[in-house]
Structure formats: C-alpha cells, structure tokens
Image 1 (cartoon, rainbow, N blue to C red):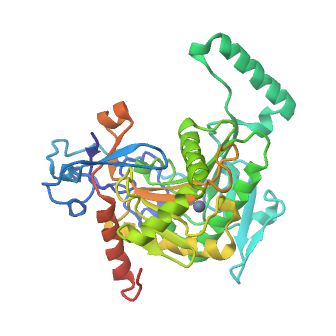
Image 2: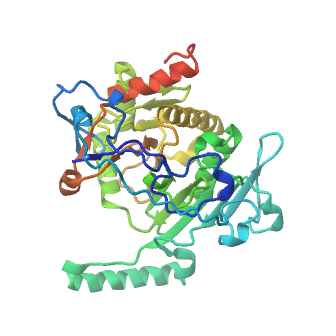
Image 3: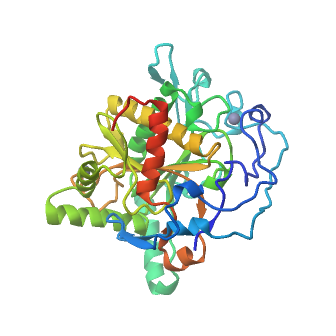
Amino acid sequence: MIENVKPLSRNSYDTTPVHPSASHKRPLSDHGSTQTDVAPKSLAVPAKSGAQSRLDPFSGDWTIFAPHRTSRPNQFGKVLQVVNKTAVTCPFCAGEEELTPAASWAARIDCNDRFLVFGDPTDVDALDWSVRVVPNKYPVVTDCSSNRDTDIEHAKKQAFQQRANRAESLFQSRELVGGHEVIIESPNHVQSISELDLAETKLLLYAYQQRLRYWKNQNGIQYISLFKNVGGDAGASLQHSHSQLIATDQIPSHVETVSERMRSHQAKTGCCLQCDIVRAELKQKARIVAQTDSLVAYCPYASRLPMLVRVTTKDHQNDFDNLSLPVIDELARLLQRMTGWLETMIPDAAYNVLLHTRPPGSSANEEAFHWSLEFFPRISRLAGFEWSSQSMINTVLPEVATEKYRECAKAEDPRRVL
Ligand SMILES: [Zn+2]
Ligand SMILES: [Zn+2]
C-alpha cells in the first residue's frame, strides 16, 4: 500500500549542500513536523467510498483508487530529516561554470526577450547565458561521444556482446550508450518554475526542443527521457532549478509497451489514442483543468499518481520538438500557472515534470504517437503492494484533483472560464 505522508517541504529529505543565498527564500526543512497523510485530507472523497480500479489505455495498467485511505491513522509521525547546512558553492550558479563540464548548448535572452543561441557554447561570450546545457558529471549511460570509435565499431561491439549473452541467456547484459545532460534553467539560484519569468520558461522549453533534435540525430539513439525533479522528495540532488535529458540506445520496455498500444489503437481505429482521449475529455469536462488556444490540461481518468496533470495539444502532434513558438509560449504560461496553483495548495511542494515525445526507436509512427507533458507533486510513496504488483494505489480521484486545480485557477482569475 502507499504509505501516506504529509505533503513535505521540497527540501525535507534533501542532503544536498545548501546554497547560502537561497536560505532566506525557501525553508530547508520543517524539522519537527509530523508526517501523517499524503494528500491533504480535503482532497479525499468521503470515507464510505469503496475502492475502484480504472484502466489506463496508454499502459494497459489498472490504477486502484482508494480515497478513503487518507483517513487512516499513521503511527509513524516523525521522520528524521537530514539536512546538511554546510554552505558550499552551487555549481549551477552564474560565475561557477568551471565546476561543471564544458557546455554543449547555451543561449541568452536579449532586452527584447529574443533568444540568442551561442554558436560556441564554450566561448567566453557564452558566460552571459540564460539557459546552459552541460553533460552530467555523473552520467547513467556510457557517453557515446567518448565511447564510439565509429558507429560501425560500436555496432560490432554490441552485436558481439549480444551473441555472447545468447549463450548465457539467463544472465543477459549490454552496455547502455547515449548521453546524459543537465539543463540549467537560470543563472540565478532559483528552485522552481514559479521563480522563472515567462521568457526564461519559454527559453527552457525551447532548449528542450533543441536538445531533443540534437539527440534524435545521433546514430543509434532509441529513447530520450526529459524530466525535471524539484525538491529532494522528487529526486533532486541539487536545489538550483534544472532539468535532465537522458538519451539511450535501448528503449525501456514500459515505453515500448505504451508505444505499441498507441500503434495498435491507431491501426484498429484509424485514430490517435491521445486525440481520442482529448476529444472525450473535452466532451465530458469533468477532468479538464485548463485550456488555451492549442493546449488542454487534464487529470487522467486512471491517473497513477495523486494530483497528476497531463498537458498536450488539442490537435495531433507526435513530436514535442516540432511545436511552434506560439504553442511553446502557451505551454510556458500554462506551466507557470500550474506550478503556482500547486504551490498555493502545497507551499514548497516537491514535484516532477516528465516530457513524453515520440522515441526515435518507437514502434508507433507519427500518426499514432502524440506528445504529452506530465506534472505532479510528490505526496505519496510506493509501498509493498505497488512494488509487488506494479499496480498503483491513488488516494485522490482525478475529478477531485481537477476541482482543486480549478479552485486555484478561479482564485487567480475569476473571469477565466474553461
Ligand atoms: Zn545555484
Ligand atoms: Zn493525436
């Protein structure tokens, strides 16, 4: 079962050295706080409600909704919160560029809010950056630029390794090759999207597009994961606002399952699964959080996590990197608003942002795959049932989550209608 925990301050488990300039802005820990339940009890439906299982058409997984579980007692009130308050320099702040590997991409915002991409990101001029991309110092993959003598040599090595593995098929292994980059979102020591201005958020999304294009053009790359962790509970090890990109020469099995289900739906019906769901959600309206001219944000019917919002284009678009700048502008505004709503409900919330775009090695073609972005706070932890069954238990129904976001949107601007 999910062990419910109080929505924590995003820094509550953070063992990261703390940057002194940030300390006045966001609390580093809430020592002495009592960990009780996940999601605020106000998000739950009455205790009489029974559990319900809902099918996620993308993954084929069933999510169990058990909102009454937010009422159960919790004897594990206090959790030791470890915070290293040693003041050290933040490697992502402007002026500390020598603490990270040489940049692979950098751009700045000029006085007219235009983006200027530096031809040589390692040049001294590029020290005046607004967004800076660097290779991760601790990559999870073998760097393809240093590993590959040639693509052919690399392919030979992988083929040899796979032949050797077939002989020992119970103990298979292969080298994972690709790239792992950090996208530093601001020269200033900020921690959340809500602290970026609109131009910075747009440039961040533009940087996502540029790095996706770069990695898609590298031979052998099958999958590109782009994500953002904010706060220790969301997996961040450094506070300074940043995203990560991991490109691999192997497509994860769960990603391939989703791709295959999208391919199969399109082959059977002639329609894209995401387009069909967006049309159905817009008709039902119960889970629509917000709309712009091009985008829709909704809480998925079988949402695997509490308060998860999915954003996508109303019209079919398979690749995120093909979105036009006006759509990127809409997405930047929406992302800032959603972060603001979340932080209104849960101040200093730890949260994740995941970007799903068509993997280069996907079985789904351009008509079948439809990009999306997922945004969710970290207010639950996986426990024994989830680990043993790979089925998620969600204590907040998406209809309840939608209402909560809508209340925040209404408070922000009462004139805005869905
Ligand atoms: Zn910093
Ligand atoms: Zn579509």
